[in-house]
Image 1 (cartoon, helix red, strand yellow):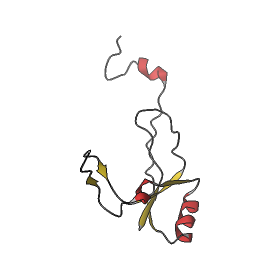
Image 2 (cartoon, one colour):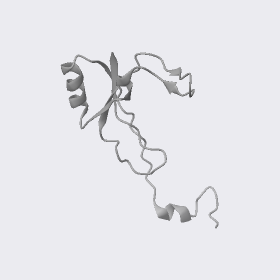
Image 3 (cartoon, rainbow, N blue to C red):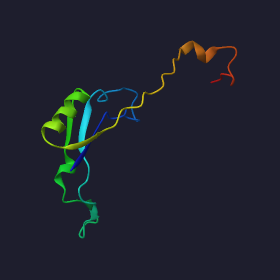
Image 4 (cartoon, rainbow, N blue to C red):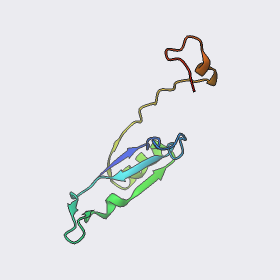
Length: 101
């Protein structure tokens, strides 16, 4: 069984960065998903794929995986580029596109 350890990305629907500081240990699928014959939903018999464990640091997640004999892979987060913006930039005289209402 293999697990992956990563930091979840920022939610694209909101501007905040809530729940992005924790590290998540998530098990990979042991068996492929298949359609349910009655409803047609994708289902699997692997219940560990539904488990997500949250840790405050990467080291805690790695220690948990090593202690329980779980094979793991760590995915480092890519830093998001910070673009400093100011409200006054909307009214600069050298804007490429003129500002209008």
